[in-house]
Amino acid sequence: MRLPEAVERRLAHLAAEADAQTLLGGAKALSARYRASEKRGDGQSLLGGQEEVLSYALSRLPACYAAVCRALTIAGEGMELRQIGSVLDLGAGPGTASLAALSLCGPKEVTLIERDAKMASLAVSLLHEAAPALQPNLLLGEMGELPLPESDLILAAYCLLELDGQKADEMVEKMARSAKKLLLIVEPGTPEGHARLMRWKKIALRCGGSLLAPCPRGAEPCPLENDWCAFAARVERSALHRRLKGGSLPYEDEKFGFIAIAKGAFERPVARIRRHPLKQKGFVELALCRAGLTESLRVPKSAGEAYRAARKAEQGDAWE
Ligand SMILES: C[S@@+](CC[C@H](N)C(=O)[O-])C[C@H]1O[C@@H](n2cnc3c(N)ncnc32)[C@H](O)[C@@H]1O
Image 1 (cartoon, rainbow, N blue to C red):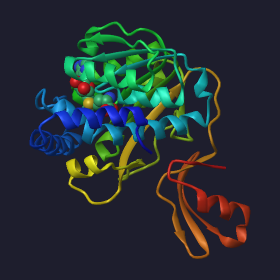
Image 2 (cartoon, rainbow, N blue to C red; image 1 turned 30 degrees about the vertical axis):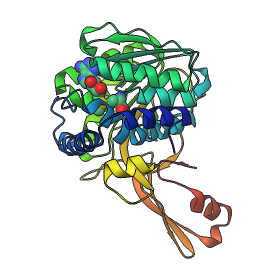
Image 3 (tube, rainbow, N blue to C red; image 1 turned 180 degrees about the horizontal axis):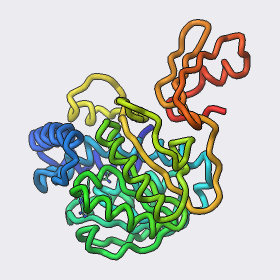
Image 4 (cartoon, rainbow, N blue to C red; image 1 turned 90 degrees about the vertical axis):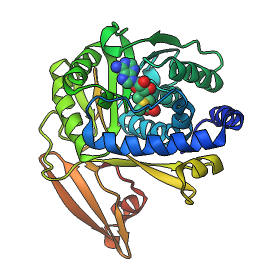
């Protein structure tokens, strides 16, 4: 998974104009704060200062974009994403989730809610690169204080953990009421992120709609105990990204969790693969969540077509 080429070009251009040491320091500070906040989820801003806006876009945007794309793709297995005409992106940051929606749904209307003016202006410029004909609506301010325009798809990616618990719960309720076709919330793939998502699943379902993904059991409580559900999106790293993240691998795996709540008709799979499939010589071991239980399924080579499907399968895929 890579960002759209025009967006990558724009980011590389902005990075070339910025001070390299400031970017590097910003990326390191952000990464430390990100890791700490995943544990806390206590409503504190992840941005340390305005100079970190570009560091965020360069170091986190590619991975968060890949996570939202993967979550939308999984949701899209159960409903037609191209029927989405309008998108509302809360805590939009540099426009990450909207960029993913543009790639996969092709909406005509995009509205961003963001409290940081510099982030918002970067989002508008990146969206312009990705879709020059689109004129995004920008609502600059606190999401809790703004009326939410009804939209086909409402997205909240990696932002509700910057609200304190009670405010985040209220936002989920508002979003669930304002989403006309789909509500998608993406969080870090941590035990804390999973716990928040399971709480928000209950809140959102009380406001209408049904759980489309990831749980094949829909509204029923999560069967996991002392464990959590997370998916992974692999993102290619550019040379600049590698320098900022201090890694040598040409890719990184972003772990994330999500809930997708749909209004209207959709299909839910019998089971979902919840861990990276273990592909061994002669068999594949799948960790499945299926209605009523979680289980491990060994698919031997003798299973023929099922074996071939298991070898191609990825974490997060449906398993019939
Ligand atoms: C970690 S960034 C995530 C940005 C983007 N959604 C992504 O996935 O990359 C969180 C963003 O939410 C914004 N944000 C946090 N709390 C907010 C609030 N109460 N109202 C509006 N924006 C908020 C922050 O300014 C920041 O840009």
